[in-house]
Each structure stands twice: as C-alpha cells, then as structure tokens.
Length: 415
Image: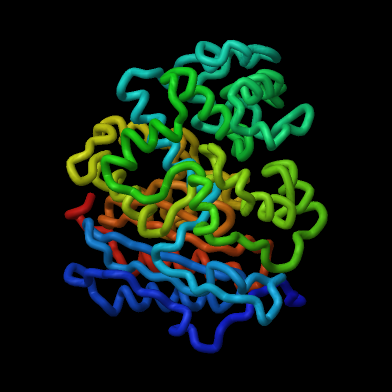
C-alpha cells in the first residue's frame, strides 16, 4: 500500500499507452499531441490507475488513446501484483456520466408522447404522494429540483435495488426537505431510481431494454448500457479510491450527498451486484470511444448513421438553460449551469473546459465526462479509474479540458 494513496507511475509512459485508430486529416496533428501531453501530465500525478480519452471532431475520431492499467496498479495493490494494461476497448463504470445517457432516453420518450415533462410523478407512481410529493413533476426530477436530494428514512436494502415494487415503496416513503420546484440541489442518489421507475411504469419496459432497443442496438454499441451481463463483469476494469482520505467535515458532507465516502462506495461499485444492476444515474459501463460516439448523436442534433433518436428542436429545448451559474454539489461546489438533465458549459467556469458556452453533457465520479460542443464540432468521452479526494495536482484535470477547448477552436461553420 502506498503511503499517500497514489499509484506507482511507470517510468516509461509509452509502454502503458495504447493508441487506437485516428484520423488527423481535418485537424492539426500537433494540436492532438498537445492535448495528449496534457492527459499524460494528468496521469503522472499518480491519482488514476487508468485514463481513456476519445475525441471526435466533425465526425472523425481525432484522438482515441488510453494510458495506465485496468487492473493491478491501485494504491492498495502490492508491488508484485499482476498488472493488466488498459486499452481503448477496456470498459469502465462511468458513474454519473450515465445521467447524460438517461437524459437522452427521457427526452426521446417525451418527444414520442410516452409522457410529458410536466406530468406528475404520481400519475405513474401512485405511491409517490406523501409529504406533498403529489406536486412533483417529471421536470422537477430531471432538473434536480424534486426536493429529495438525499435519501431519507431507513437505509435501503441494496440487494433489492432492481426490485421495482421495493424501489417504488422506498421512493414513496421519501420525505422532501423542500417544496418541489423551490430550489435545485443535485439528486445524486434518488434521481436514478425515480427515472427508472417512471420510465418502467410509462412504457411497461425496463429502461435498460428501452435504451438497447431504441439506441444502442441499432447503432451497434457493444457497451454503454446500465450494467453488464454477468459474463461480462470480469471485463470491466476496476475503480480505485486514491489519495488521502477527505477531512472529516468534507467526508461527512460527501456521505450525505452520495451515501458514503470514496473508500466505502467504490469497492461496492466494483461488485457483480452493482455492475449487473440497473442504476440509470450511476452504473453505465462504457469506453471513452463509445461515450464519444454517443455524444456524436447529440452533436448532430439527435441523429447518427441514419438512426434518429430525437429532433433538433427537442434537443434544443432539453439544453435550454433552466438554472443559471452558481455553485453546485455535482461539481465540488464550482459554478455550473443546467439544462433539463444535461449539464451545460460556460465561458469561464464549467465541466467541459473554458470558453465552451454551447457544450453540454454530464460528468461522473470523479474525473469522468461525456459531452458535445457543437460550436467546435466536438464529441468527447473521458474516463479515469481513480477516485481521489483533494490533492495538490487536482488542477491537471481541468487543465486538460481547457487544453481541449484551446486546441479545437469554435468556428462559424459549427455554430
């Protein structure tokens, strides 16, 4: 076990780097290399056993690379542990980046008339009425303003997390801490179960099946659904808590928001139970390449390779700002703008780099992101397997995002 919770950074970074197929015909290759050097610099901080980055520019894959190890180089792994290098095809749990996928499914269903964002949740989940929750709409849920950002009451039985009857009972028992629609507080734990059960009740289908049938299968995705088949669990790279534990007050706030500290929740997220479940807020399994390709659907206004998911008008409504820039729990109390389910970029602050006001997507625990920036013709997927607390090199992650926006400029052609 390393003293400071860091991985053992290999002396030869090229030896643990995989480069997939790339097309630099429409971009300066030197710009691609500068982006990758920023990613290598971030990796060298020692907080992430593995990093994957995939960027599409105007539909072409201009960067698709991975560095590090999928298994065997965590802070608690012995020096002689078997180390398995990451590749561009290694799948990872992407945590809350799942919300970008789920948000897309919800807006697709809204466009098809399955439900309206202003329908009440209790129209689909009849038990969701106590403590004034009967006024909660699907829009409240999607915009994290449903009043139930933290799970109240008895601790749920995780072994029953895929049991809809049990989930609806537990959701019905939730007691809001504020009136629905009053304020926006990130619903890290309750958002996924609420959306899953609303979609299930409205369609009569599991949201995993809806996503597969309507989006993933027609487009030939291998991963990017909620969880994986039991036989695929060994293929999913591990996530690792890294760095030093958070100070006690911050750790307490983190436990309230997401249900535990890094050292408590990350081991569970590596288990077959979690990785085979359906948690639309946090257990999508994907690669940076597939997340970038999913973002390409959004960059193109809701269509890819002849498969129309939604119209550009629906997507514009989904990405219209509904909450202005202000500190947000979802980004470590950094300022953030929101659409209806999608995080939005901004000029100075934002989850997708500086000078990116048209960008949208979602981040995941901790340094994971899927996003598109139509003004740049950019569709991006970024995955890292370490889950660090605060550390002195933490700014290397936003520096990478800023490097991407600097090297792929906004153009009139893409506006």
